[in-house]
Length: 234
Image (cartoon, rainbow, N blue to C red; front, top):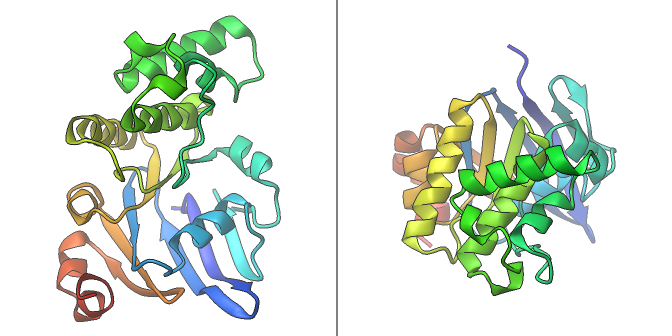
């Protein structure tokens, strides 16, 4: 089976320091993956290399068997790779519905129908007409998550989806992620909440100092002495 995403020996340097150093990952379709590691281990930089926000200095990134490193972020997005960011990027003066519509270029009626369907999916349909700036932090995260889904991406990258979200909204978000997996989508998430990672992900990758330290199912990762020393023990 051709992996939906294959990262091969990716290196990204900043001022001579390798923030990502020879990292390789292979993601199969229809699974949920976790990417963990201490602060500064290179997780978000790797996300940026995958999505074209940063250019790789070495290595290759392939999506569905085709190289995408070197492409602009909007090209990668339209190929079927969606992502959220650590810092929420909603438009506060637009409504929740309008925040979803900004990524579309098709006819208004079908796009509006799709946006309302996704707001129902994350249980925010009652707030479709509310300005995003008036929503809670957790609700804004759900809006951003729903916006990523507007173009029906095959691969979804979530950067710390649980951070600052109350348990009720977090449960709705995690249910939505599982639902996407059940529909055949692939999810890769960066997350510091180990309960979320271990309860949601089927395979976990661990980064430390820009390098891949370990890879495997959650139970194996939890008992790996290198991971305990590098991550859990700090």
